[in-house]
Image 1 (cartoon, rainbow, N blue to C red):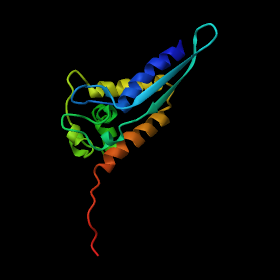
Image 2: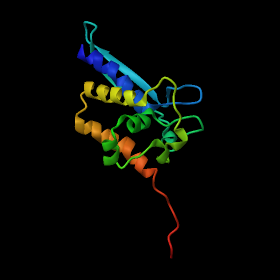
Image 3: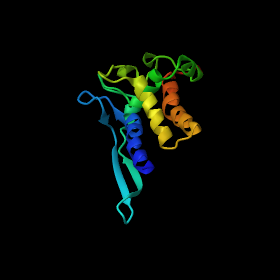
Length: 156
């Protein structure tokens, strides 16, 4: 039913926001998750909870050579139109300081296609357009903008 489909669609979202390319694994989970599935007395799924823990937060701003940050950043930058990039004041991955070490191509992964699959999964999970925009603004665009900032010494 619908609940089972939503449970299945949670995974692409979790992977987009919580998985990264590492040297040893192109889709490495950088967090822990505990999934609790509730069943009714007749054995049908009646609900579910997902708990997250131990997210590798440092990966947002720094990656080892030949590794990438979380998939959602690359999906967003490769899956949005030039107009959307301009609205967000974004350019290429190489211009995003938090991602430019991770501007590594992943064989057999189409980030643009994966971005559209992530958005599709969010819609199946009943995210509104406003909620999707909020999560992209908060998690992607703002980090890319922060990566453009430079800190210097002020004159006295």
